[in-house]
Amino acid sequence: MNANDVIEAYVADVMRRLPRRDRREIGLELRGLLAEMLAERSVGAVPTDAQVLAMLQSCGTPAEVAVRYRPPGMLIIPAEQSRSFAVMSLVGIALQWALTLPRVFQDQPLVTWWFSWGLGALWWPGFMAMSALAAAWLRQIGMTRTSWRPRVVDPDRVNRAAMAFGLAGFAVGVAFMVALPWIVQVMPEPWPQRFAFAPEFLQSRAWPVLVLWLGNFALLAGVLSRGRWSATTRWLELGFDIAWLALLGWWLAGGAIFQTAAADEGARGGLGLVMLFVAADLVLKLYRWQRRLRPLLPAG
Image (tube, rainbow, N blue to C red; front, side):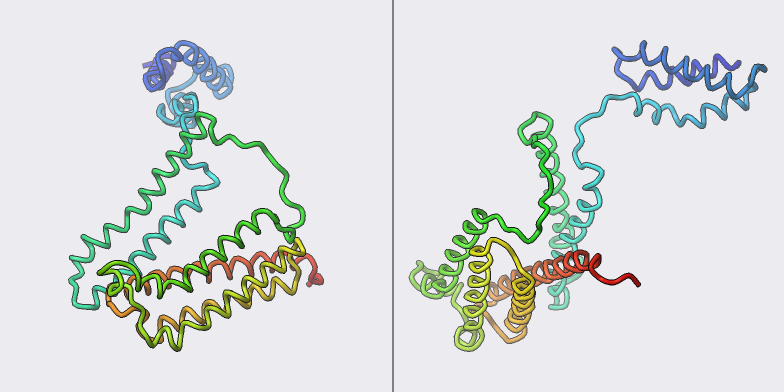
């Protein structure tokens, strides 16, 4: 088989992986490109079989070359988001395993856990993949197309409208949580029995949450009135985050929250997730603050 036959076989292998309407044009282009590359390698002499094979191998396999000529399809996960997608998938699985593995130490067989909660945790990556697919489809049809806007130059400035809306939602949520023990009592059976709070929890461990809620609300209201964060309010925000972690940890370690075991177990799992999110938010805030302060530190 001479050099032309080898090149023709290579081009034909590429063409069969491309749409029929594009094969003729791309085939002519690829043949010309390979002929030029072979002429440069052989420098006027008759190319050898080794030179032809080396040149084609340097171009890649026919499948790899065909990918370069194919029009781009629907991009589901952009390259810059791949790492975040993988991290969020693994963290979600790890959280579900961490919250359900204690059942194994409560006389539940490991095989039973694996075929229920263990494999069941894989719903999270599937949910994320389907969400990414839906978002890619919306981008393709132009429903989520956004225009470029410059980044905020002053990171301490706040969006007053968004913050006011958030404070209103914060107040409604706090009012609901404060009234929850009385709301549960007027619900039809069997809900009052299932979601009855432990008396010891309400008497000794629940009241500090009111102090933190009021402090957080006052802090955010002050930031809203000024329209920007300051060094003092940033420090206060970090202090409240640490106080929330301490309070939630005390709740988890101090005894029962609900009277029924099922409700108490669910509440503990939810509080564990909240603690994880608060800790992650605290670390992120410290990291961003350290990056902002770094240019202000003296060299060396």
